[in-house]
Amino acid sequence: MKNKIFIAVDTANINQAKKIIKYTKTNKLIPKFGLQFFYSKNGRKFIENYKSEFFLDIKASDIPQTISSALNSLKDMKKMGYITVMASVGMEGLKAFKKEAQKINKKIIVCGVTVLTSLNNKSLKQIGYKDKVEKLVLKQASLIKQSGIRGIVASANEAKIIRKKYKNLFIVTPGIKLPGDKKNWDQSRVNTPNSAFKAGASAIVIGRSIHSGNIKRNIKRLKDHLNQ
Image (cartoon, rainbow, N blue to C red; front, side, top):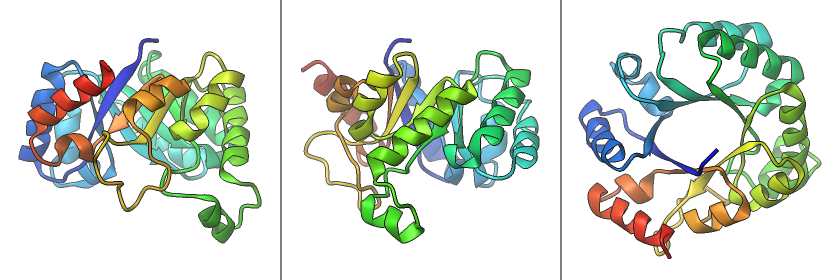
């Protein structure tokens, strides 16, 4: 699979979403709709009627039957190319989610989400995990691989070790910012696009570095950075 770039449509405003999408389509970038937009008024309807490929980042997390039923309710979204489920749902949950996704479209890439980029070793300890980030991500990567799911979401910090162990996984790395941009306050494990791809990422997710300010100019900054 060739490297891909997903642009996070982080807004509840339909007009702002359209503005972001206008430039993503022009530059062959793929929009990623997260919970903020999906839960917004008319957001679900907008995604349902979207005519091009998109990434739906719902991070499903519940018992197997519930997440399968939730996914079944999205079967009208024929252009959905990617969707997320938390690795923490366990083996049975991952398998059930994958099975339901294939009923919608056999080509959908389900991505198991490992440790969120907002978390660090201290955060994991507070939650109750004994393992540090890297070790826990590798355990979750093994679970995802065994479940038959093709994609994994992990920061670029872990992408290199995942790629070394699992050659064929589709690795999506969030927590991406352009050089010189301020670090997002809610993310602990942050990298640049080039560092993520060099680490082994198949795709990156970038949001605020693109849609904060002049979107067209920021996309040019992204292209210039990738061409370095």
